[in-house]
Length: 384
Image (tube, rainbow, N blue to C red; front, side, top):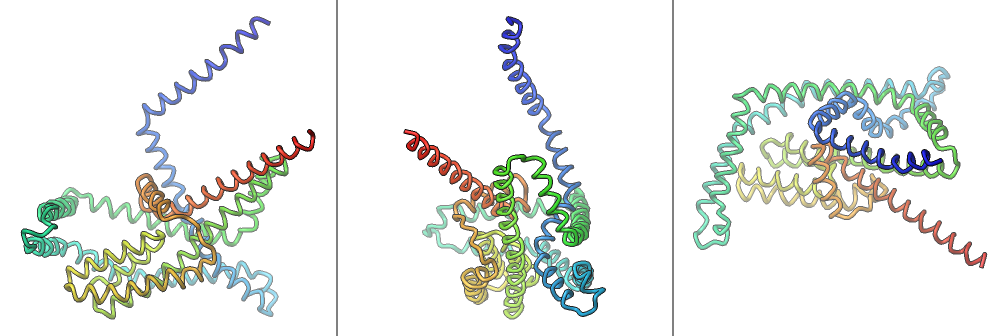
């Protein structure tokens, strides 16, 4: 009996020592652990892209499936999902071929032209700053010195990277990322084709892990909420971003703004970041137009962009999304900054839906806990 008591007394100390040893080894090999995590994330990136693409393609896939089910040929109507998957895949191949042959060359030329024009643009901005009167409040911020230092550092970083071969490494990284994207497209087709089996598998897995019906129902409820938020954000934001790309590019082409296709693509991509993305895109477009075309051209660009952004935010996007994310701008800023700091550009894009999911789960948990407390109090009063 005494031996059992001694073991029970030392057991928590042993557990604490093991935990401290694990923490010490983790901190000591933090760089290696981070490298392994990065490697693992790169390996599963096609699956990650596949999930994103499957959410985005779900609406057109369902639409095509309904059309094929209405076909009177039994061979086609019975295999409507398979024919819709094949049709969507063929359409994607046509779009990819079009992008490679027509859009990518224009984007590549624009990027190179912009890179070589950056020193001249900085010289223009520096000359404008030098013309500011000495008694102006802007001179109290050391505007000239700040612009000059930032410009020289930025330019040196670009052209030194080309000298030491980091551009080649960047091209290889982009090629690897494009390969992951293409594999993700293939994975998404399989996920759309087998989505009923995938959902059934996770339901069976949940039933095997959570034996109690209440716990299983709560987990399934959380899973539906997560699925709804991700589907709403990715599919709706993706469609709205395409609209932003087309409209912004058209406006810039009509106004004869340089790098119109590149800037329109940037506006479409940045639209994935609520509140901040569109604002940043407009600032960048107008700033570059100010440097390349002058103040009058920048105002000509700002007015239609501002009108479109208001129309998009108050009419187009709410009609497409049909569900408000219900998240404050402050939380958006914090989520985007944290996501970008730890996970780069994809962290910035996915920070908002993840923040919404965490918020909804926490609110649901708090509501469930409060209801249990109320039931417990009522039960206690009835017993009294």
